[in-house]
Length: 535
Image (cartoon, rainbow, N blue to C red; front, side):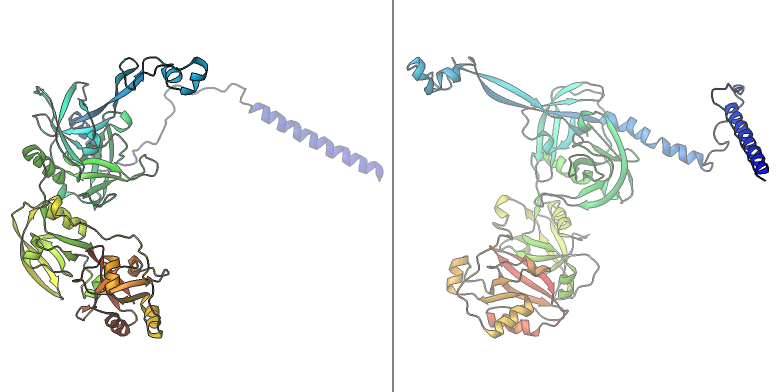
């Protein structure tokens, strides 16, 4: 039995060895080191036989060439704007002068020495230090006028312009408008007869989703073309005192693109690239351009008049929140802005516009927000009579207003401030006051002679003085600060209620219902504004 088992084991080992030997031979025969016969050249077909897209090939071909044609037509019209700043720097002729002649501590070693007079030509030398930047500009006239941004040429002592064919010219400033960041420069001396000129389009025809291309000199890389779409219109960013109506685009815009061209797929200039939104200083998909219609109006004012003339109504305005709409009994169409103040002696007061009115349109142009109203009014010529459609106490009406020129003297002396004031002291507590404070989130008191003197409140101003604001509030009431004056309140379906004392406010607060929308008119530092909330 043992002999048979040993024989069987030997047979199995023999079979396994044979199998392994065959496998090893098989692998050896497939080794990459063994030369294989190569196919005859041209016998192998690479890639699929049919194109992935076979329909409308003509349309695809035309689209493929769109940006090629744009680049060919627009790039020559976009120039490099090189602002040069010249500073005077003082150098010491003798590098050891300051060490050995100005340091009195060395007198101990070398004895008293005569000090050279500061600024003496014997010791100091004045040298010019020139530094230059690089921006972009667009040729808009065969007469040599170039449209760019004000911030590109601000502070420049000299300006050079370089065309795409590397021809250089000196340029002079025709005018600038810092409030819109628009500047116009002109080629000095004789203007070339073959100067390429951009075609000015109509930025009012733009829609979100339209194809656009940006042309400029980002990071000193001249004649760069990037493509994208119009992401949004009517944007306002940064300094709210400026006149803004930006086109937002995802076409790559970077430092150096400022003043360059934003064009549509027809190669028409529809914007001047101005700024980017970025936390790193580079492109992240959000760029802004001044609409050409706005830039053109400013440009023509600068060229023909040397300054920009803007219309003025004499009102303070703010956007309507859903709470404010409900408190005023308005629908939710989204149109209209709220008049928070009317300045005395100005066109709005003369025309009969009142605090609390809602402006729907001016000169036939619908008003969607306060930024749009500012731009519409600024574009009006002083002396022009325009119809203003408003809502007052739930009723629509139209008044005629004669626009005047906006000047520094007509601007309000102060604007609503968020600076926190000290809480008035010495105010007694009562159970009723605590209940009112708990329900409204704020504590008020009657304006006294002492508080008028302390907060510089004119005797003509009536209302209640805010003493305390609940820090846990997260609605419009959080904008209130101690020292503010609440003059009246609006609620939906009811007439406005003025406040002359704390009792007036308490009676109003007791009538407020849960879920009711309320609008307070607040006075702060001579300016007024509305605060809305839901009780």
